[in-house]
Image 1: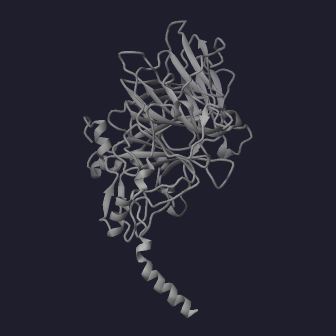
Image 2: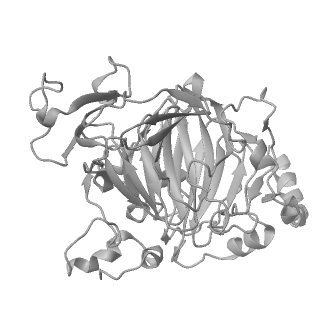
Image 3: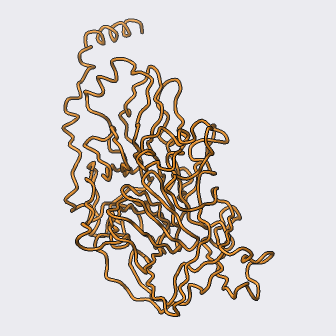
Length: 487
């Protein structure tokens, strides 16, 4: 694909495969405007050296490490966790993270929340289908707002200190984090940019994440986000679990999100010659924010190895599957990543996308069928249009439905879809919508509840749903009378 390809071009493609020009050009794994190199795979053991020959071989913590570096292990699971669940990374750095000046508590951010138990007076329970227009991004000519200061919590369940639960956030910012790093000590962030690219510096290297891509920064990993201009996106934060690829079952070896399409950073360090390089590191712990000062850059890692590494994924690489005969397959076929709960039959969270695909089922009611399910669903739109919402749904919007709230289209769409088979067609062209789904009930935060952008789905859209059955009363009476005679 031409080097002058724009991000908009990637919004209009049907699938990543279209960028490969039927093999007539050298294949490439990242968008042309992505400035970084990556390592491919999912849940692998990776290693990377910014200076070749740095990682010690045959052991992790030798008495002396080349260049006088410090070995530091980040352990993200119990030491005795089964091998396939054990998460860790070894970092070889100029100064260890322990070199800091202590902690102070920062003023509470009134727009964030972490305790979603109904006894908390700052959260609300509602069966009403709620929606929010896109949250305004602060004007660049006014206050400078970075990623940390622009966090706002919408809804969630549980509490991070219980080590099982989740929170959904949006972020709006207009400025880069300057000499400031962030650590989420509560859980893993799955970040979904909607407007503006995120240039993310981590201890493991750089990630460039733009609309149409996602990234995961895991618990305890330090990062810094640079932006250019107005930036907005969504976050799903999980506590007590890590993201995994969903099982494929009868699909076999391939499909949905393939492991080789996940990209991890390569080592890239930052060290200043100044003996005093002041940085602040903001920690989120139990939903509260703390800050420590240190006299060196937090991103001074020369080399690392391990399987606890941040990563990104391009959603245009998702391999959609579906029915090629009749009826709908359950929406689990749209699952990109899943996180386990203590209930083996119900995940803590799923991240699903609705992206361009073929719709071919015959003799089938094509719109989303009327249904009620036990999941909490919080939906957003990255770009394009999505016709499955009850109200106008713009990029940056949020839509929320709690468990067992009825879903479905108005009568006009029902009647049209019931009349005759629609043609075989491509749907969701130029669009990616997503869903944060959970088996747990959500409560809604004060910030979201009182937001000027909040509006309710108007149930009047279903007032015209016609009782077609009653118009067949004579025919039904005849059938019942005949059935009675035949008994």
